[in-house]
Amino acid sequence: MTQWEAPNKPAELTENRLVEAILDGTFAINSTLPPERELAEQLGVTRPTLREALQRLSRDGWLEIRQGKPTRVRDFWREGNLTILGTVARFPQYLPTDFVKHLLQIRLLLAPEYTRLAVQNAKESVLQFLDRRIELDDNKEVFVDYDMNLHILCTQLSGNPVFTLIFNGFIDLYRTMGALYFSIPASRESSRNYYTALATAASSGNLDDVESVVRSTMNESITLWQKAENIRLGE
Image (tube, rainbow, N blue to C red):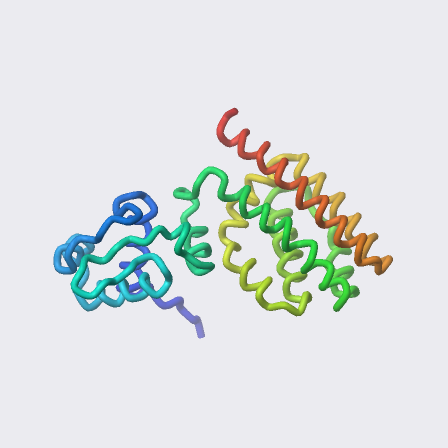
């Protein structure tokens, strides 16, 4: 029997509309939202639906609901949390210029550790996945999928679920930006070399070498991303 995906609830749609309005500046940081009745009419929803959406956005750090006062749009870059980070990643058209670069810098800090732990805990599973590198077709979609799943696997095998939760928050953005990154032959070549070097280091069981290989490649990816971004911008 076919399982159909349930449609978004009105409160979820309202929540997404409000997030987009915050990100595009319709409701600027530190501004106040219109009165509830007026805002509900603008969004075309009932006031109970609006209240539910506002409560969710308050819980996640987008809004500050103040008793007897207008609802304030928080400075989410300063007052936000990982929930906001994952939500922002779903709206790439509104991302700051250096957002992906900043994410890659965070990956540079995290990837050496979760990959080291993955090899330490389940070396054979990592090597089994890396064996598939030989079959990779030379196209961006294949590389995006393989690279993303390698990172996910290593976060899972690390034994620290927080790594996986962080990475899962950016899967949609990873696919979008990864397609741009891997459109450059140099990026695909760099990753092929990385998979081979990582397989060699993991096979030897030298965890320091594993960490060094990952750190070097993650650092190189920041430079390659900048090249891909410059091409996209026509620079």
